[in-house]
Structures are given as C-alpha cells and as structure tokens.
Image (cartoon, rainbow, N blue to C red; front, side, top):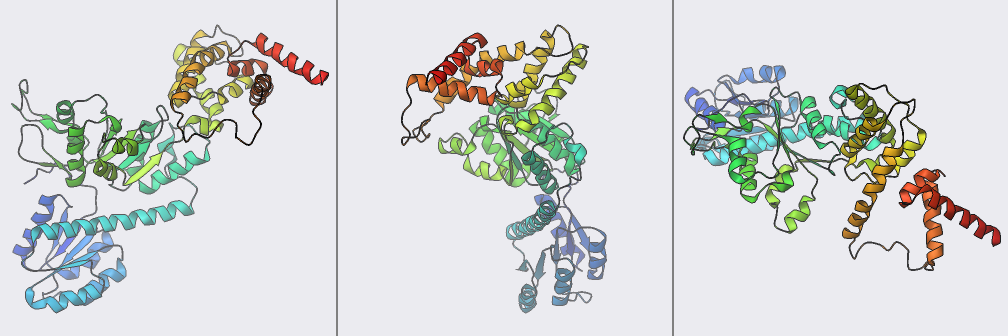
Length: 481
C-alpha cells in the first residue's frame, strides 16, 4: 500500500453502501490508489445534506438498500449537483436498475463483483470530469470579469501591458486546478515569479518548492525529488525526504524542464500519471499531492521532433499552458520597470534617487533585450553604480551597454535566419543603391529615436559625430536635388 503523507486538496468522493464490509473495501481501494479521499455513508438519506455542506468530486452509489431510492436517487443528485458524476454499483440481479440509472444520467455503472482496476479508472475519470467542469466554470467567470480577485499575488510582476493582465486573469481561473501547468517564455521574462503567483492564488496549504533541473543527472534528480532510504547507496547514512514530500499539499516548480535528461523524464511522467513515486532504496510507493508546475525557454515541440523530449510528458505537462511575452513586445512596461529598478538600486547602494531623462526610455524601447526583465535590471544596477551623483542619471552607461551588446544581437539574428524568413527588401521593390540604403537606415534610426541623434547613433553603432556628418550630407543632397 502506498504511504500517504497528507490529505489531498481535492473534494472527497462519497461512497454510499449499506453493507459496511463492502463499503470499507471500496473506501480502502480508492484511498490506496490515490484517486481521492473517500467519505463512507451507510445511509443514503445523509448524502444530499452532506453534499449541501461540502463539495463532492463524485458519488459511488449502490442502490439496493431499503433507504436507497435507486434511479430516483441518481436523478436527485444530478438535478441538484449536475457537476458531480455518479458511479453506480449493483448486484447482478439488478442490471435493469443500473441501466435505468444510466438513462437518468449516471456517469458509469458496475456489476458485482467489481473489477478493481476498471473501477478505480472509472472513478478517476469521474473526478477528472468534475475538475474539468469546475475549470470551465472558472473560465466563464474569467471571461466575464476584468478585475482581479487576488491582485496582491501579482504584486512582484510590474506591468501595464494588456496581455500580461489577461494572463493574470487566466491564472486566477486555473489556479485552483490540481492539473499541471507549463509556463513558457524567453529567459528573464519572470516565469518563476508567475509560478509563485499561481501557488499564491491557488490557496494550497503546502509550500512552494522550486528546483532548476538543468544539469542534473538522473541519480541526482531522483534523490533530490524523491529522497532516499538509509543504506540506499554509499553515504546514505540516514533517511531523507525529497522535494516532492516537502511540497506535499503545495506546489513543486520545475524550472528549465526542457533540459531534463531522458531517464528523469520517464520518472517525472510516472509521477504525473500515477501521483506516486519511489524513494531511492524503497519498494513502497509514496503518494504525492504536490501540484506540478514547469517552465522552459525552449520550444518543446522542436525538442520532441529531435527526440530530446518525450511527447507523452509534454502532453502531461500542458494540461494548462501560459506563454509570457518578451519585454520588447510590451514596451509600455519599460518606464515602469526602469523607475522601479532605479529606486531599488539606489536603496541597495544608499544613493539618492535621480530623475530619469525621457530620452532614456526612448533608447531602451529600441533595444532588443534578449535577457528581458532580468537583463534590464542588471543594466540599471550597473548604471546606478557608475552614476557619480547629480539630479539626472547619466545615459553614458546605457549607451555603452547597448553598443557592446548590439553585435551579439546581430549575429544571433543571422544564425536564426531560415530559408522561410521573408526578405528584408521585397522582390517587387527596386533594390536600393548603397547610398540609398544608408539614407534609409539613418532615417529609420532617427524616426525610432524621435530625432534624438545620440540614441540614433547608438542604434546604428556609430558615434554621434559620424551620424551628424551623415545627416548633414543627406540634407545637402536633398537641397542639391
């Protein structure tokens, strides 16, 4: 029998059976399988009052006792609690009753003696059906409201972006689910912060436990997640619980999931499928009630195509999925983040908070930010450290950083170019001369920089003096024409 370390957060399954021996067998079977906690009832008249007091994920009903109303009982449950599936168990002499219950809307039925494997699978599907209906209802509420119910949970994610706020609303809709969630997005966008927000909104009683799985070999992954028994391997002098046990009743966040090794992927898949695991050195499985969140900056579908990532694990991880947009796609957040990081850096370094020139926002809005919010924070902290003092923060450090990092971005763009990438200059437009091309680049840089030559020069990778000379040449050429 699998060990149980805590009570799951899912609503229980109610089992109604007048025969106490049969009732206890079904209760033990469900709890042993890890499907859900079971509430036993020997009197069916207690069922409806119980369901009015607390949510019930499913009902297992044997309609044969004198207090059971058979098909009428099933009808009452479905009428008052349409989201709660009913599984019927009957004796072989009452097959007609089971069929009648199915006509009334029962989820499934079994003729005694019950096949334990099929019964557990059926109740598991019934619970999943209940959870799915709960999530659909939550999504309907999410689509009809714009205000957040847990604003404080997202306090560490600074944004004015409409898409980000829609993500927050989606988080509130699915946070109560026990299903897994995959968070994708480029490095530095805040996937870990969003995972913490999901845990906060979920209201789960256990801890939020985070693990970066990149670089972990299979043995270290297994020991870290599942723990070990004393004597499991050389040096295992004591018993140690893993992070799955530590996250019991809470959330386990696995970052960089795209870098997980194949043997470890198999073990994670088993944990997701069966909600159970084996500590190293133990042949007794332990049940897990930790919700699994995962994050990656990789395209997992591409890794699946190359055989680096299991397709079945991908589908298990993506019961829900969120992609966080990069900062260059939410430029309205740049002033907000810039001001916050400057204040944070000044508090850390015990410096007076300087004013921010408007040109700095324009400069940063034209930077690619491959490292996103994390890179922006590092850039600001470095600038504040270099700032000698004064009312306005100097832009020199920002100009220097962008000039030094722009060539890397250019190389990256070339490496990522594929035959399907559309041409920079469409074929139906006359190809410009070199002189015309330079003029176009200068004009575009000046447009993006709001005619600020210092910012435009930084975008072009030249000095301000060189840009000034080119601008003057262009003006003279226009005058000559």
